[in-house]
Image (cartoon, rainbow, N blue to C red; front, top):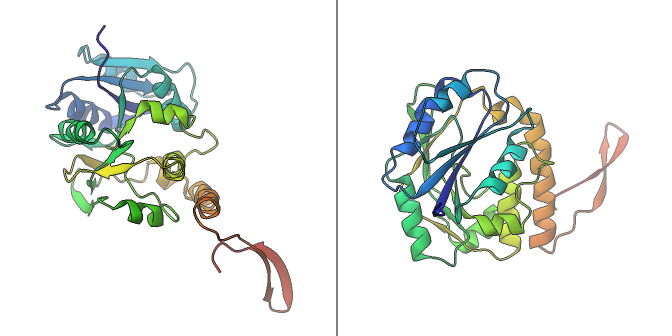
Length: 257
């Protein structure tokens, strides 16, 4: 079997009403040289029924025997993937026309780059556009932005699979911000980022998303990554300080002077 240039990687857990439009948005792409690898993380709804209703030979389904979470499922997909590049889409998002074609064209024109990012639109429950995000940053801006937040969108990104494997894939200790930590490793190890101008992905924001349901966990993971990035990319060392509140004392760590 011919090796595909791209593996489109999706993980699914109880995909619900958003799964079908997400799958069809990938299958309708103008670029055809891809495999569509879908990792079903032991869904309890009709997600597998939806997936098995498609007979496109590009679709390959991995069915986890039990629920292991999105980060671990992404690593399952990373190990199973056959493409040179990984293209990411979540089960509640939608690929826009020309997404893969624009990403692949950029990758072929800049083979030295590890990751290709792109502008995205945010959509609500009903698919209405609520916001536009552009991630077209210079290398210098990415170094600055990586200190405090993810400089690119995970959804829609195109990444060299070999580079992901070199970094050990996604950190399974992190349930929400594993993509941010991977980008941070890429930056620290000198990998090149590049952005297209093509708006290729609609990212759905809703209360049932992993991020919305785990805000405290997200906060903890971000603090961990911020500290690591500051220590790695700057000469600043966090130091212990004493804060006085109403006559009492508490020992803590500060991140910024």
